[in-house]
Length: 489
Image 1 (cartoon, rainbow, N blue to C red):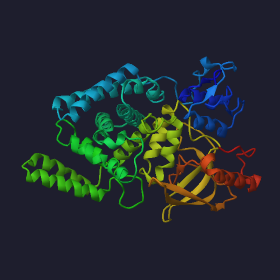
Image 2: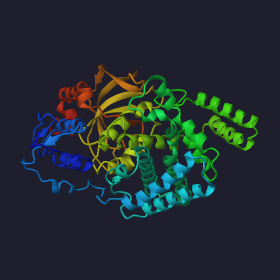
Image 3: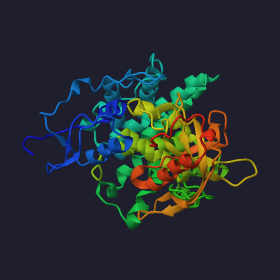
Image 4: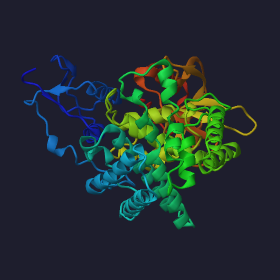
């Protein structure tokens, strides 16, 4: 080990290895054992192994031939730019204003002036970001500006959430040429404020300081949206819509199995109890605040899309930030988790916006849904029950979720609970029915199909083998777009 040096891997390094398919050195574990050899034309599976081992630190021999200096010069794919959009100076200033607000909030000393100051700084940051030349295609380099070194992890997550929302909403506004741009920007600024404040309730839950959370503690912590709302309900200057979003951004669906919490019925009962308590104690103004939210929840309209965007931004920020109980994931790993949990966690269509507008920019311009990747589609055709298809991606474009795909056949998916009570898709390989016609669909035109899962060799090797076999068994006339059967990823 004396001759070995730790190899620090980040999104930039991984992007270079993906682009060149070169593993530049022999990689060793902390015991000095070779785990990944140096290689030209490395496969996607071999590159994925680097991500896996990097979480536990990997090492290299400095005497190996390696040019670290050239690793950052990666050409951006068509439609994207390597311009860095996130300013460290502006972002640190943003974080200081937020931390001051948070400190006062937890001390019950927030004034209306403090609320207005926080909103003013968000608006200033939003408009600065939106007016950059490459705002639609530049890098969202939030993971490399060193927030973790200057703030605690919960603040880092809050700033990352806000930046993800800000970038996503500004790109949607600009790409769709919103007619009422001023109103759209105001809603986006409010959503960015909600992204900052969604987890303030966790600051009051001491359980989050522990490395492991089990049983009843998990259920306790999952009620944090209500705690966040209760903290901010009496605060002047915070828009009503923001308070609603704090309450509902992780609310579970009453009709389908999902990973969200708290339950809508439980929330209504709690709010009613709190409103009654304040009314009986003479604080009728605050009681009316809670009653107002009860009516909004009962109506159940106007917040679902924004709430799901907040939920995704929270997940991306959390997964890519180091915490006392787990290391940070690489951006592309986080993107895969968000896609693969979409069936039981997020509203239809919201994940597509995330993947199309910001996921590539957050991942050092590395696309996740690429040519020859095997994916699972959810099919929602009029008059038919939803079903699932195994397919491969044939093309790449500006939008990740709208490629041309080749259908390989049908497969059954069931819901399964993990040991940690999370609902995940369970694939039934024996249910696969190959379709030798290999029909091609353009997802930019076919709105009945959407990508909901990307299998992984480590977890779903059998699925990828089924996909390869389906291509081999189909007559060559059925696959004119393929001159040869590709190595599937």
